[in-house]
Length: 322
Image (cartoon, rainbow, N blue to C red):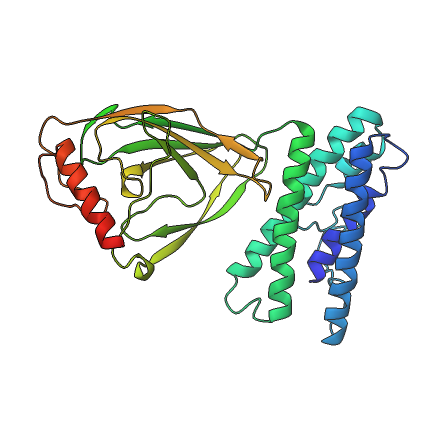
């Protein structure tokens, strides 16, 4: 809390520079929003500390040979004195860009602090503190995205390639997915994987048949009992995450024909704020033996596949569902 008060105070200081340095209405509105929210959160954190008999400022431990007035202690993401001086000395569009880049850096530091809190054993057990930290995380992420859009910057780039452009009906359809962090800030994520399916839940998959219709999701017996696990990961600036995604584990692509696959990621609660991958086409054929499935789906047996057997299977499945 003490460190976050110091962190928030600099954000308020930065927003105070806006009025005299830019006429950008969007930036002024954003600055007012940040200033108000950070000031209110500072008051909350001070009350929380005072109620527990704790000081509201961090004790500055004296270090032999170090002049703290020249080397102030900075929390993650805080702008250095040199950066703050540069921000004070510019105007108009140059100020707008430096402010947005600096505040993105600043907000990303807050996300690091929240992550460190949750990673500390025994920390954030207080329900009020837990909810407060969670609100900071979601609020800072939303504002980072707003600032990225104002800069015209996309945080990530998504690319996909099929493992094979032609597969035998019933075999696994696999794509190689790459996620590149093209922003200047690390990307922190928590991803839920469901046992036996293992599709990255931070992505959405648009799978369509040759007529352009959405392909239905596969139905697993007792799916509500299927367990999973959460994996936390960090994708640093300029880094690319590559992983195989077994699309047919979730989407029913057993019927012969052509299928298109596109992957996208929703960045905010706005359904229109999405980043999409390229579109790839996979052809499912009737010929050949079907290799054993690895996805954990219902049909695990190697078998020859025909359009007639697909229709029979689909009819039987609908009767079971009804």
